[in-house]
View 1 (tube, one colour):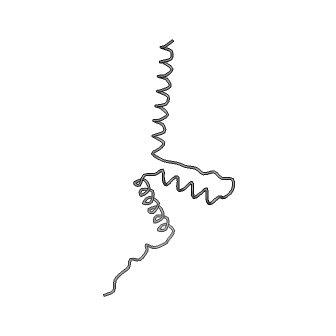
View 2 (cartoon, helix red, strand yellow):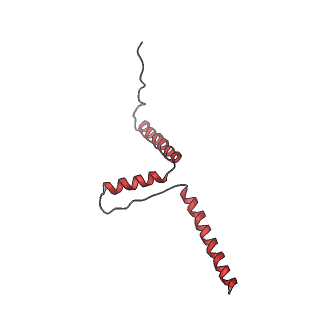
View 3 (tube, one colour):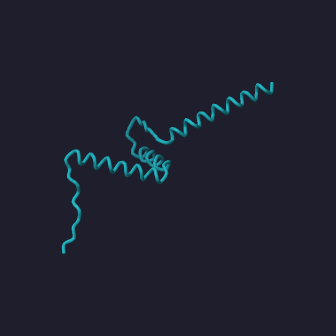
Length: 90
């Protein structure tokens, strides 16, 4: 009887460790989806803040830099010139 219970525990442990491994793999690319029937700005803001809070500082900066590069690429592709630099006059 004890060996059967031990086997069940081992199976249970291995199943949870597999799910944890899958979860950690998924955590590399965090994806949150908000599905609302009607527009609700308060819930959208709460959702966004929860997502941002779940990220590390490094992940937030990487996301910000990646988005900045994307916007710059879209602007240059759509014909917007590079923003002029400020030049000091003598």
